[in-house]
Image (cartoon, rainbow, N blue to C red):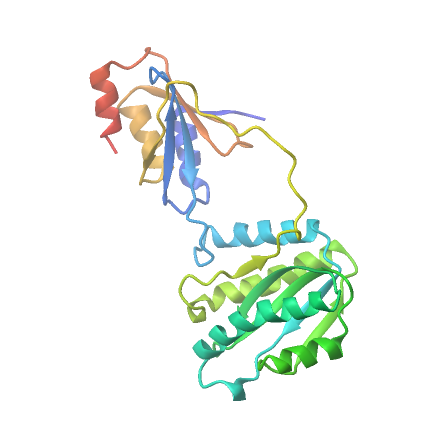
Length: 262
């Protein structure tokens, strides 16, 4: 696979779907080489970050192999406004899970809040563990003052999980404005996802000082290439760019100039 260099690498950075929040520059000790790492805002509302974020979550939830989907709806007649319903459901949900576990029902979950078009909350849950009878779930949800309409559906394959999660995450993103401020769309229990293998975190080169630049990576790369004579390289399968200065290390004055150039 070809490695893009210099002007082509800069143009390629412009064409990649980045939200443009900024990037992190990781230089080595003498600034002869700099790694340019794009930073995403990771907002559900962002037109560039939202779709890949939804795909990532759909894949991750499918890989956790949940066994069934649960849906909890809101009885709108019991609340004066959607905001009141969100506050009540947010308190009722942990109580529901405690009640199920008291009944010796294994309940590991990843749940998704979905506002309807009118703003009322629904909760979709990917669950693994013991089977939850629909009548019991409806009884407990009603007892907690939320409503009686619930659903329990068996999951038959991974593709069904991914499609289900993507559908409701897309809907949640479209109606994100109805969610209370700082409300997390996705919540999950500690043991729902498998533990990742132990791994050594990537470290910046010794003596380097990474810093954040609030500009699009293509602008940063263009300045490094045209103003500071860096050669830019990018492999299509990589998420970072490498800027290498063929003329040698920067002087202290040039390092200061580069640091304040953005």
